[in-house]
Amino acid sequence: MRTYDVAIIGGGIIGCSIAFELSSHGFRVIVVDRQEPALEASWAAAGMLSPAPDSPRDAPLVPFARESLRLYPQFVQAIEEKSGKSTAYTRHGALEVFLSAGAERRCADRLRELSQVGIPAEPLLCDAARKLEPAIGASTGAALRIPGEATVEPRVLMDALAAAVRNSGAEIRSNCAATGIIRDGQRCAGVLAGGETISAGHVVLAAGCFSGQITNEPWLARIAPVRPVRGQMLALRPAADGRLRQVVRSDSGYLVPRSDGRIVAGSTLEEAGFEKRVTAAGLRKILDASLETCPALASAEVVETWSGLRPGTPDDLPVLGSTSAIGLEGLWIAAGHYRNGILLAAATAKLFREWITGAEPSFDARRFSPARFALPKAGAKSAD
Ligand SMILES: Cc1cc2nc3c(=O)[nH]c(=O)nc-3n(C[C@H](O)[C@H](O)[C@H](O)COP(=O)(O)OP(=O)(O)OC[C@H]3O[C@@H](n4cnc5c(N)ncnc54)[C@H](O)[C@@H]3O)c2cc1C
Image (cartoon, rainbow, N blue to C red; front, side):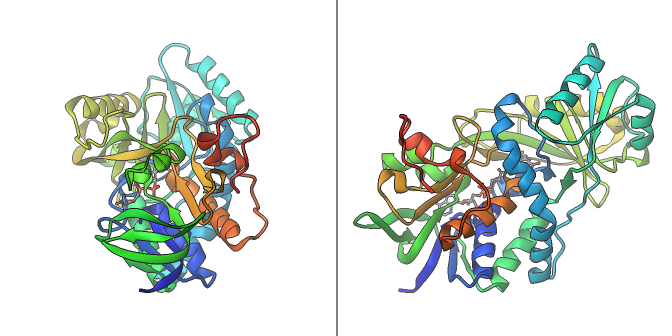
């Protein structure tokens, strides 16, 4: 039986980013995935690196999201150097467009909201917005530009990241489902995976929306209360007049350009359990929003449709930290990144390296501690 410093359950972007960070710092790391890595949410994502809040509930996440966006250039550079592969990272900013009645008022409200959370944005005259992105429609009533935003192509990034993990000395074991957490008294001593015992000084649970149910022990679902939130997507191949240079978003959807000229359009937010069906209603919603924003896409070819399961939590915030709050040392939760896991991977990986090495954390992430679910009363012990 081989012994590792760290065993990571789940080979999505979160598990692989933590593995890369730790193995680059000399740790013996294994990632186990019940299938090939990167076939769940991290494969399905649009790839926007946007710290802009989707709703007021997101406000507590913004500082962490901004920090992760700041770390991204060095994060992708390290992956590209170690793997010899591209991550398709680009920083072209994003355009938010406001359509129909009240567009100017909603644009002004949004500018205020972004300024309150420290995200630079500039209002644009409609003509200037159309000059930047000629594909947007004449019904655009107001627009603002967020220059600091970036994108990656998640499938390209994940291919590079998995190679970087392996090249840095970590092991990725596919088709190896974790089915149990091994305890030695009050310590987590490893993981049962693929029918084998894997001993490790630390175990990180990073199984996305499946994290609460890798075993049927109720304490796990309580401390990692993650649920699937389905998002449907489609890819369009536009004619020349439908091309985009940057992300274009409206209240009802987003369009993300890819390096080969395709545009990824999304999305839905659905409570559909673990069902990944692509539905007529879902595609209609996305297409209606896309064509309302960019009528020039009406002639685009639909080249792919898919869906993925975001790891949602009761408060829409991630679950990050140790399970020491329930008296179990050595087990860490890195789950519940919901709509922002691609963006948050850089800061999450750094934080877990600091926690696991015992270094002073560079970011105060107590807000995201699993203790908030395990110990909901005042006086809850911090988990980190
Ligand atoms: C449609 C859509 C669009 C999105 N767009 C964006 C975006 O633009 N920007 C952004 O930042 N985020 C986006 N997201 C969110 C982002 O994709 C997720 O937050 C992120 O991928 C979560 O990563 P993860 O590694 O936690 O989970 P996952 O990628 O789901 O990985 C979990 C892994 O755990 C494995 N696993 C499960 N059970 C077990 C087990 N028992 N044993 C071993 N392994 C197991 C799975 O096989 C999987 O590989 C989007 C998500 C969706 C669905």
